Length: 125
Image (cartoon, rainbow, N blue to C red; front, side, top):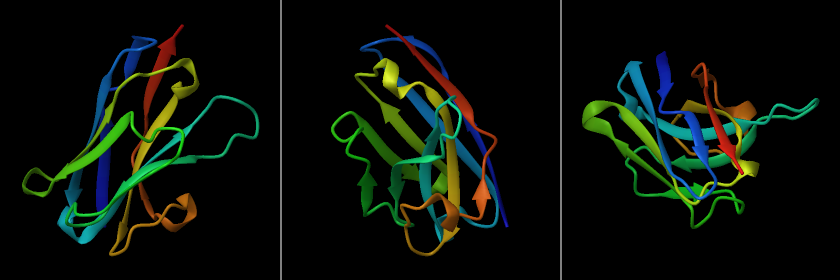
């Protein structure tokens, strides 16, 4: 089992940047593919895929809405995954969650058994 703790969220103006971190503890994080998801505060909104990275960091995936603006990376020596978010806009406002699953990357939230508590990102216009 792996425990995940996100940090780095906050309030930023449109056009600004934030870097989210996800610190993993427990089992060796390099055994896990990692994903970032977000959930907007609106009734019925489900967790939305943002980005994912393979165990060795050699393969990454992005939602179309963030492609070219967000960059996912990982430091397995320090058991940390990052999400660099640039050119933020108000539509990026959400709670951001990191998630882990053994072996292969998935773009589906239901396929990740391990989740952090989330960090809020608010982008003002």
